[in-house]
Image (spheres, helix red, strand yellow):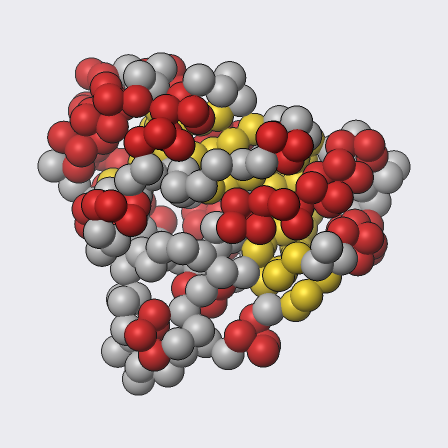
Length: 251
């Protein structure tokens, strides 16, 4: 089964979440079922005038959507494996492979051959998801870690679109799932606390992260939300790749 791939890159350090600082490769997939106004990868989904119009970059781009013929490649699992190997010898030195997006679980069934082969090689497969879609049972068998990032009201997505409680509750019971919430202000704690309580998410597997694409914005945001995170026993995630490389693509 073919996979709609946006880009493959690495080796890099994971910049966010519970595995921040770890050596990894990235397989970023195309397409998303959400349209977050501040998304840092709009080139994975903003392929129509309507979709780019929902993103903060619309004015700077003159309303021009991204070209899906440029941004999307249809690849088989074997092709993905070989491109990873060209960048880094995953056969000799297995590492973490992060499957991101977009929303990877839109292609959950198509990912099964890829994650199965990565598991056979000895790579640890991590999936980054918004937590609106359930992973197929066969796919789940090969995933070492999920980083679930439920979107809050400031994302611009409607409540019914961004919050799927049954799916979030399933992830909350999964030992390999961590939750990462992007915050724009301390007011976001009210919504986060509501989700954590309703879905019975263990506090030790919750992280908050300031929204921002510059080192200064992230630092300032982190200082604002730090006291609230500490009082709730939530973890704090920075954006290490932005500290190292700025708002560059493929880091």
